[in-house]
Image 1 (spheres, one colour):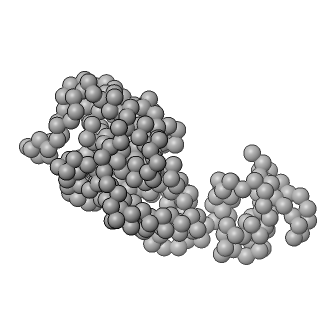
Image 2 (cartoon, helix red, strand yellow; image 1 turned 30 degrees about the horizontal axis):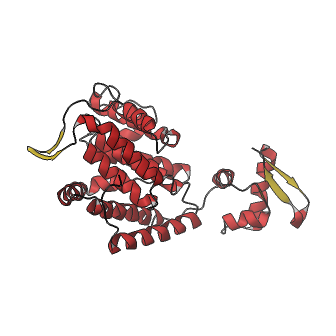
Image 3 (spheres, one colour; image 1 turned 45 degrees about the vertical axis):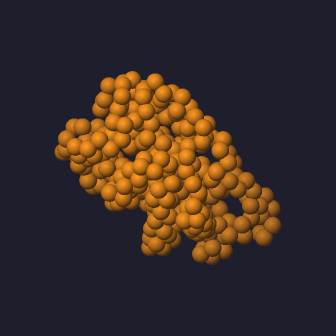
Length: 318
């Protein structure tokens, strides 16, 4: 069954804006962020997703844990961070359409924090905000069938994956398949699905923006529950995607180093190219700089060349 939602004019406008922003991101080579930006955004992602769950560690403390430095804090909070780091480090290895992969991700996230991580719940569950029960999840016996249908929907439905990732996030919260950890898993798995759209989403700190608008996040979930479809949540979440991309594009411009340019080249998919092609990737470098870059790659042994002068062709060695 296809989960219920409507593609409204507002959602169509958001999709158009996101597609335009993704084009700008690719044009500026931000779809595969350089290491310094990548690490900072990973910290913001982990801080954001765990702050929503009540974790007290700061971005500075999370950075220290990533660097292997000791941190003073509640043991549970430190364990949550280390589990989440492991899960995001393995993000690209998870099959986005596999229940087995989803369960593995949950096990990594919740190891040591609950009984039977990675297993669907076997009891009834409700979601509370404060003293109020805001949602009664479907019976435990229905979870395997509901999750199988949800995975088939995101894999096979013709709607854009940008929309389906939001629907998956909402429906995972609605089904509440695990006894705990559904929120952080839903946010992680939406990121995994979005990576199929564009690699930039692996390093875009969507979770920090959700944490900054946490009340609106919960309102969108509650309104979707009330109206019986995920349209309000899709609208909210696409707005978050648009905001995250706009923030990335508004960062101060920084010219990549030679090593960063060459690292990007290795990920670019080019198999053979000329110096002119290389300069099309990096429009702000001179011909002399391009030549030095390519000569360095040849010396390092992962690039070879044929021809001479303006007829030189370079080949990536895999």
